[in-house]
Image (cartoon, rainbow, N blue to C red):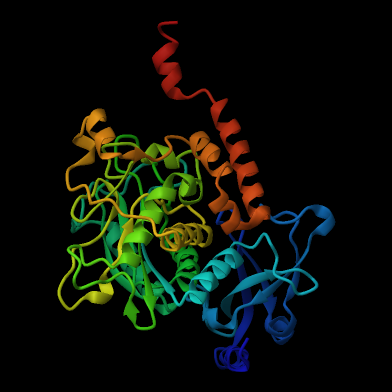
Length: 443
């Protein structure tokens, strides 16, 4: 950790009269956890970390090994703009979780991504991502009463959500997060804010911050924002399309001016890796029972494992090349949803792509027809497989995956599988309204 970073934090705290510093970290399911320290404890925390009890945090420690240390990352220091500034400003820093003896804690999702990014760096690559997180605004968290009936890119004069989005974007920018677009999405009351691409670790921190800001602004305005993948039957679900590329220094390793798709061999093998390993990483990118209500044909969510340039029914889209925009060459992975753990999701996507590069996977030609409209036979002919259709299917595939185990490490891998099996068991014993409506009158 650089001295300058710690010094910068101490100076900023003084300058802005910060009284409390919130230390943020993430459990294995991607929920933001936090505890506050006072300004008096800050210097010690920056030097040695801050102790806390990890036994009640999902996927962390058992009771008998619960002492953890949160080591703040000074480069993530930001004032929290929705807290009062006068005399008691509040700031935050993301933390790495370490054992009392100073070794990195095996259950820390941020460490998983850091390790994967380091692996890419050893091969000379920087991994950049630009996720597009969609979400819904509802009247409250008790149901799905919508705020508007807008559609894709609509601007509705009376749309209360336009103000909510604007306020959210301004607050994101105050917290150092670059925003490219914000617009209404396809479904009623559905919205999207796209962050400017950056390196994967910064982006995972940004995703955590973004989700919190969206919810905070909604709450402040008396409504509820949700990243639930499929809250409304018969409408599009919310995705987290993730644009990604590898850079070597200042140049995009995916770009080749002489290739018909303007894709280098590295880019092609990376995409082939993502396609081949997509089914086994789906439990990480789509981790909830509800995630699989979105991954069905017909609602813009990809189900079929194929790639294309124009077609939005495919799992991976490679946006068309514009002359002079070499740096924009990228793969858009369309299956993840915004309720994932971004640290683990980015890590497994990178792992799949790097595996493709290491093993020289060959990329099949793109499928430029609408895969939804093909017959089963035609899809077989093209060799197009599908993503898992339920959480149970996803668990079964991931449980056998060497790639995911290696990427997450035994601790997180086993905790995640165990947690997801419990979720599936809780879900499958429920009696749904559908069953009562469908079967009670006739059986």
